[in-house]
Image 1 (spheres, helix red, strand yellow):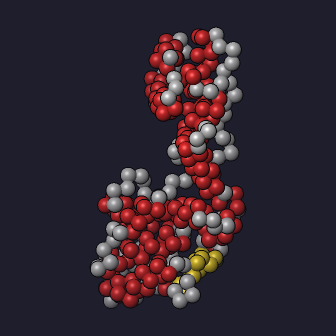
Image 2 (cartoon, rainbow, N blue to C red):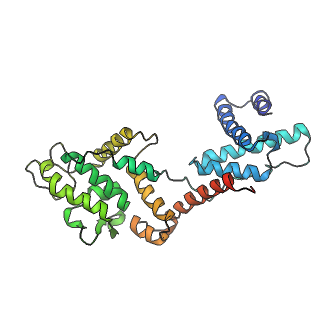
Image 3 (cartoon, rainbow, N blue to C red):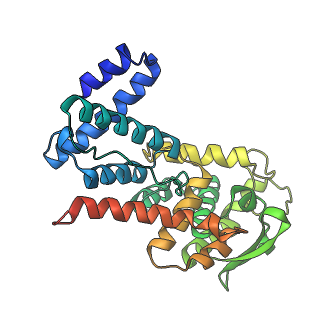
Length: 292
C-alpha cells in the first residue's frame, strides 16, 4: 500500500523528487514501527499512530520534520480509506505536539564518562582539558562564561563559582568536589607550564603561547576528544550544557534551581528539559508496558 501511495503522489499529485524522497523515508519509519508491533501498516489504529509520533519526537527529530512526517501519515491513511472504502480514518485529525520545541541533544551518562576519560592528565595540556570538561559538565556554563573565568571567581573550598552571563548578570553556581579537585590540580600543576612565563588573569589559557583560551579553541578541543571517544553525534559545549541540565532533572532536581544555575531569565526556556523527559518516558512506556 505504501508503494501505491508513493506512485499516486508521483503520477497524480506530481510531487517533486525531493518531496517524494522525504515521504518515502517517513513511511519507511512507519513500516518499521508497524513491523515491531507485528501488524501491517494498514492495521495500525489511532493509538498506534500517536505512539509513532511520540517516538519520532523522542528521537530528537526537529519539529518541522515531525510535522512533515505526520502530514505524510495523514495522507497515506486518507489514501487507504478512499481506496478501501473504509468507514473511518485513524489518522483523520492526527497532529504533532506543537508545544514541543526542538529537543536539545545531550549525552548519556556513559558517553559523558567516556568523554571525560579522553584527556591525559599527565601533561599540562591534558590536565587543562580534563579540568575544562569536568567543570563544564559540573556547572552547565555557557562556553563564553567558561573561558571568561578568572581564578578568583572560584571558591574551591566552599564548592561554588561566580560567573557573568547574558545581560551582564552575575550568578553563583554550585561546583562538585570532583570538578573542584581537577581544577585545583590544573591550577597547581598545569597552568604555570602553559603560561610560558607570562601572566594572565584568565583561569584557562591556550597551549600555544599562554594567552586566553578562545571559544573556537575550546570547540576544537572538545570535538577532538569527542572523536577519539567515538561519539557519533555532533558534540559541542552546548551539548554538555544540555547534558548537565537533563541529568540533574532526571535525578529529581528542582526546575527553578536548574533555571538559576543555567542563567535562564525565563523558566519557560528551562522547561524544554521536561519535554525531553516526557518524550523519553512515553517512548519507554509504549515499548515496555504489557497492556499497551
